[in-house]
Length: 348
Image: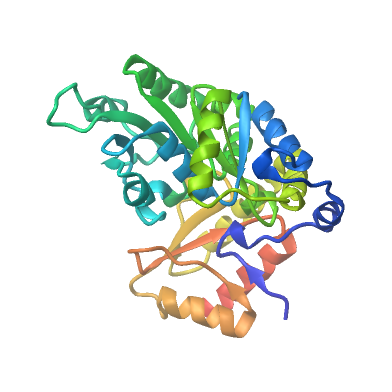
């Protein structure tokens, strides 16, 4: 029985043409700046996002850590969401490795931080306080369901950053999903940012890697930060070759994943004991809840779907009744129908 994996878009695997490109990629030593495929990927990514330069990194987490450590020094502070991936799911790396203090704010239902809360969080010039150096946003905001953040809001945050001499970093792991959902060119979404990281894997199907973009001066320093983290790779053009296809092709078809997520959510909304807020299904990710009086728990639902239907669904940290579903290239409309049929059977 074929597996249907809805736990995350990180489970997507590369296309056959990616594998072919990887096998035939021209390579060199990237630490010396001599890998032509990586150089091409970095420049195409920077151009697409309207920035001067790019840096290929091993993962989205590494991209975020490199950005934070490049923008901030030990004892500095960054402002970010309590629900941000950088705060919740990266082992406190910015603090552990860089001595950067997080100043966390509550995220709003639309994925934003309140502008007045950001302004209040910025420290004054006082020897008792850490120096505020960085504001971090996440687009899409994954922990609340893949909610896209508009260019207008990001521009407002960028204005606050500039007025206070701060930098703005965007964790854009699923940035192209946001651009698709908002029908906004991706460079407009990040125009106000000083740095942006985005994943080539997840919905873009490359097997490995992310790209961090920004000014030439920022990327020059980011090279040093990547190196000290052990991120200097050698003939990694074999990975970048898949990333080029991810950029050129896979960014243009994400609307299909969003449509499949909508179909899946609409079907789940009709199943007794399951609830989903359809108004919040914006991209390729959403949550649904299993009612307290349901015949089975969320954990039991997960276990039975895996054992009986080879269907994998995700959980959500700290909320035992909540289930996360994420669509991607390998989840077709036929697999959506099969998943709904399985969930109906188990819940009955």
